[in-house]
Length: 437
Image 1 (cartoon, rainbow, N blue to C red):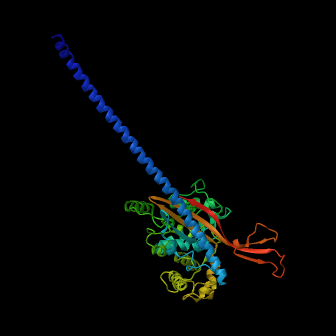
Image 2: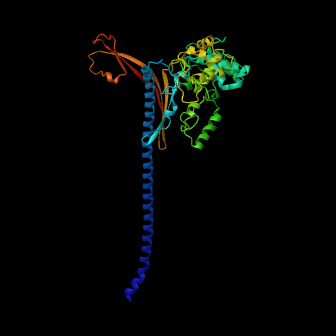
Image 3: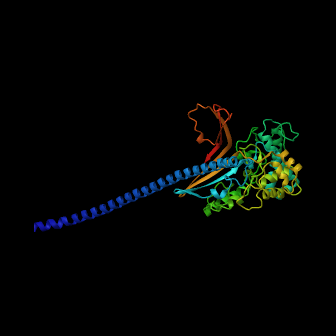
C-alpha cells in the first residue's frame, strides 16, 4: 500500500517533467532548424556572390579582349595598306570599321561586343570654329532655329564656346570690355533681371581647353536638350522604360538598341552635341567617316546653302559608299579632300570654302574603342581612346636584343653597306585614355 501511494504521488510530477522535456526538445529542434536554414541561406548567398565575382572578372577580361581585338584590327588595317602599296586612307570599308565582325563574339563562358569610333570623324571642341558649333546646334534644333531671335542666341552660344576655351578675358564679337560683364548681362537678361554693374551671375569661364565633352554643359547657353538631344524629363522617362524592358545598352549615344540587332550598329544616328564632339583628335575631319550631322554643320558654316546642306551631306555619304547600304568597300572612298568636288552639288571653290572653315583629311589617327564583356548577368565596359601611328627607329648592328622577325618592316639606311644601321617600321597603337565601368 505504501509503495502504491508513492507511485500515485510521483506520477503527476514525472508527467510534467516529460512535457517540459518535449517542449524544450521542440524548441531546440526549431532553433537548430533555423540555424541550419540560416547557414544554408548564407552558403547560397556566398555561392551567388562568388559566381557574380567570377562573372564580373570574366566579363572584365572579355572587355579587355574586345579592346585587344580592336587594336589588332587597327594595326592590320595599316599593314594591309602598306603591303598592297595602296594610298593610305581610312574609310568605312576598313577592317576596324566593319561592325558585323564585332558583335556578340563568343569566348569561353561569355561573349563580348566592341565598337570602334573614328575620333577624326567628330568635331574637336578645342579647335572647331564657333560657327560650326552654332550650325551643329541648329542641325539638332531643327525648324526652331529659323526664328531670328533663336538664331542669334545660337550664334552667341558658339562664341561662348570660344570664350570658354581661349586664354584671354576679351569676349568674341562683342562690344563689352570683359567676358564677365558680357555674360553677367546676358544671364541677367535671360532671367528677366535689370542689369547693373553690381550684379554678379556667378558664371565663371575656364579660359582653358576642354578636358572632356561633358564640360560643355558648363558653357553659357548649352542646354541639356542641345547636349543630350532630349530634355531631362524625357531622359528620365527613357531610362525608366529601358529598365522596365530589361534592355542592356552599350553606351546609349553609340547604340540605339540591344547589341544583338547588328544592323543598328550602322544605322545609328546622333541625338545631340555629345555624339559629334571630341577632345582627343588632330582637329581635322575625315570626310570618309564623318556623319551627316558633322558634314551638314561644316557645309552650313561654309555658306553652302544651295542645294540644302543636309542634302549635300547625304550625297557625300552616298558617294563614298558607292550606293551600298552595308558591307561597304573603299572603291569610291576619297583619296584627298579635293575629291569632294566630284559629288553632285559641290565644286572645287565650294570645297575650298569648306576647308577654309574646317581642316579636312582622309587619314585618321585617333580612335575610341568601346568594348563590353558579358558573362552570366555581369557586364563590364571599357572605353579606350588610342592613337595609331607608324613608328620608325634605327637599330645598330651589334644590338643582340633585336629580332627582325618581330618587326613589321626592316631595311638598311644604306642598302649597299652591310654595316649600315637598320631602319625598323612598325604600326603602333598607344592608349591615350582608359575608362572602366
